[in-house]
Length: 80
Image (tube, rainbow, N blue to C red; front, side):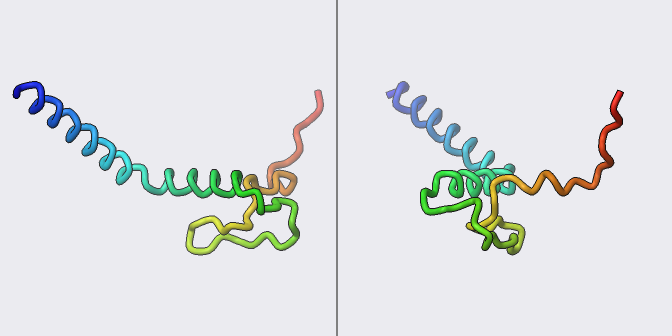
């Protein structure tokens, strides 16, 4: 009987730990999951000219996985 109680307590601890991590890291996890969903969607064309903007802080389905890196505001590096 003691082993069953110990297993029950261990499972409850794992579940509560998982819930705690989900709540604490929610913004980061949502962003990562949205990026994975876009990357794994076979119907998504990242080169499409109809890529939208983000809405409400959540990336839209048509947003590219990486931003336009050529539009950097940093000055060019000085050649040595």
